[in-house]
Structure formats: C-alpha cells, structure tokens
Length: 246
Image 1 (tube, rainbow, N blue to C red):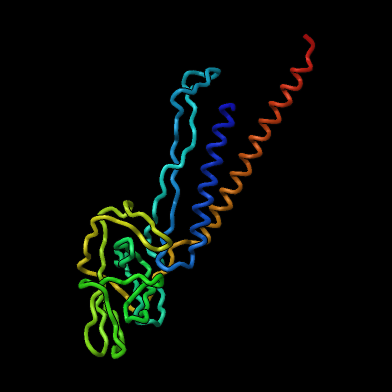
Image 2 (cartoon, rainbow, N blue to C red):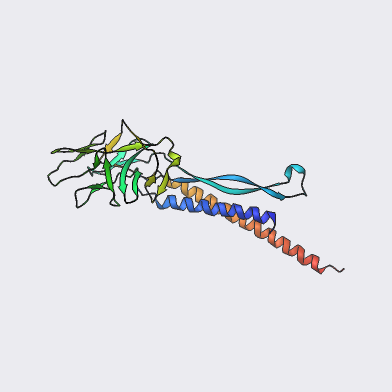
C-alpha cells in the first residue's frame, strides 16, 4: 500500500474514533452529572519511511494518531427537581462518594433516592456515603433537607453529612459507566457548595457536538473521495502503460 493511502487511512481511523466520542456525548446529553469527552490528536512521524522524491526537508512521512481522551469537567447547568434528597455540587472539581461492589466510586450525579431499606442510594442502587458511612432514613423522618455543607436533616434530627472529595489532578480519573469515576487518593473537601433539591445536568452542548459531527462527517467523506480519485488515477495509469507497445 502506498504512503498516501496509509496516511489517509490513519486519518480516517482517527475520524471514526472522533465520531464515536461525539456520538457517546450526544447519547448522554440527558444523563445527570455526565462529563463530556474530547479526543486529542497527535502527529506520528514514521521512523523508517521516506519519500526521496522530495527535498530533504520533506522526506519524513507524518501520520495522524489519536492520542488521549480528555475529560471536560466544566459544570453542567443546575436545575431544581423538588426532590429533597437530590443534591448538586456547585463547583467543577468535587464529587460525591458512592459504594459499589467494586469499591468506592465518585460521581457528580446527585439524583439520589431512598430505597426500600431506607438507604440513600443512586439511581443504580449504590449507597451514597456520608462522612460516617452510609446514610439511612427511617419512616419517621419527614421534611428532609440537605444543607449547603451536605448535612442531611429531618424533623427527627441529623441523619448524616454527605461525603464530598476532590482530586489533585482530575485528568487522572477514569470513567466507569456514564456518571461514575474511578480515582486514587481522594482529598476531602472542607467547604462544600451543595444545593439540596437540585441536580446538575450533563455538560454536553448539543449544538457544539452536532457541529463537530457534521464537520467530521464532511472531512471523512472528502478524504474518502480523495483516496478513491488517487486509486482511479493509478488504475488509469497502469492500464495505459500496459497498452504501450514495447
């Protein structure tokens, strides 16, 4: 396969990967606490390939390679839900702590609810952790309220305080599912900005993602046509050369 085709193929592969990332963002536009992804590219210079027909400064062949997916932690809009056990963090670097069968996970999705056992849980059924452990609510607890510091109270008294943590480098976090993150060395947040009865929505901007999708689709189509034209030109040249008389 010729160098032009190889370079074009790497570009197509990257654009397909980019399209997958955009499609996943759009699929989670209504997922509370979802953080969008952005795929970064880098140049890869083939160490052994050369094009000696050009000047010395043009010999290196440059390919396209998808480098890393960067998480976008800009906060989504915060909306009131009317549910007193819902909660939103009004910053862009803190997370609630939940307990899963695989261990502690971290989330911005504050669509909490109370299960049949009286435990405060996520919509997936994972326990929401307080500073003293899981948070439990009894049938006698009425008029639930979540304060700015994460303290949950009822007319019977205090029930617990939501555990909120942050990380020194948010880009070290890894996604698990749609709104959970895996991280190491969480740092407790001393001053929280929690809004009870609210939920943070996805930070996906639908207009921007659709624009990116159209741009990628057009670029992919243009490149495909260019590669086809190159193949047609090569076939025509071979056919004409084959017809020449010796």
